[in-house]
Image (tube, rainbow, N blue to C red; front, side, top):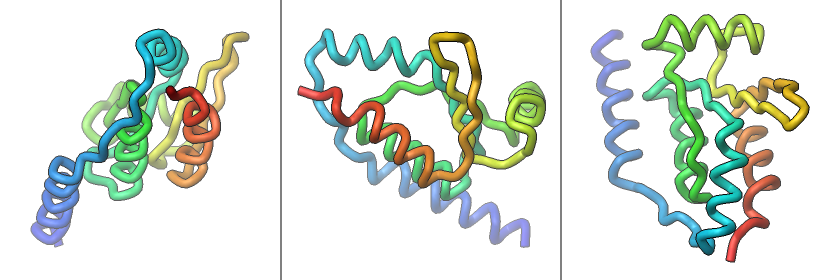
Length: 124
């Protein structure tokens, strides 16, 4: 079973690297504003999780630079996810707002809908 998981994980990562979506283009000022907003976001993920890959591909498509933390390989990231989000489940998007409040969003489809709603209107 370990060999099968390793092979499937390697296959998922191969397709993620070879099927890189084209990012939307924004003017420099708009992209700087988007980058400023994404600095308050962190994606907790496992590298070869297919749902995490789905979110990362969407981030690339939208031209978003969001910090990622691997909760499988990092004890620190795993601890942050458990304490903040309450469960070890990925993908999870940590959203910090202007007031300093933090929201933890699970489910790849919810994360993608949130990112598209927040950032897709900000393009040239």
